[in-house]
Amino acid sequence: MKYPNRSEYEKAWREKNKEKYLKTKKAYYLKNKEYCCTKARERYSNVVQPDRKTNREKYKEIDRLWAQKRRAKFRELFIQIKKEMGNKCSKCGFDEYPQILHFHHLRNKRANVSEMKSLKKIREEVTKCVLLCPNCHMILTFITEKKPLCTTLSDGSCD
Ligand SMILES: [Zn+2]
Image 1: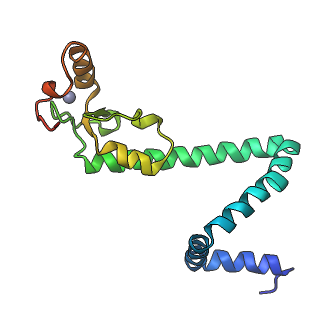
Image 2: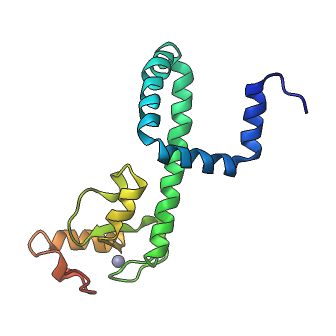
Image 3: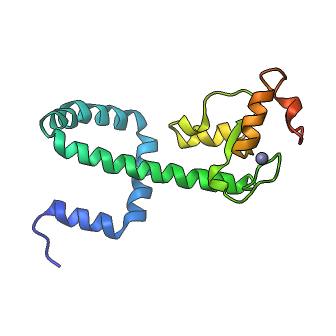
């Protein structure tokens, strides 16, 4: 197959050898982290930022698609985490709709899990949580305005 220019050829090669390309790219990045970051920052302020200013409409669409992709990724992560945590309310055992289960903090709450922006931090944060159905969560919150949180949990998993 003929390519009109070198960059087209390279693009096709990267598509074809995606895994190999990503692996090499990551290895290079880890080895030259500082250089890569400086370059990326330079590129952002010299190329991306001015381009964003002149092509607002184009970037609106790009950002929309990116946000959509990210939301899907988070949704998937929460489904996976809930599955790992048993997919049911730790108080009453409700397991009909795992999608509606809440994360309830037992200790050291840093933020609402659903509002966190980093996949890695979410992973860390949920280790301090149990799953509760909305009903149990609301009852618990109501009760704990007078009592400490941990004593009201039947499984007593808090230390
Ligand atoms: Zn429940």
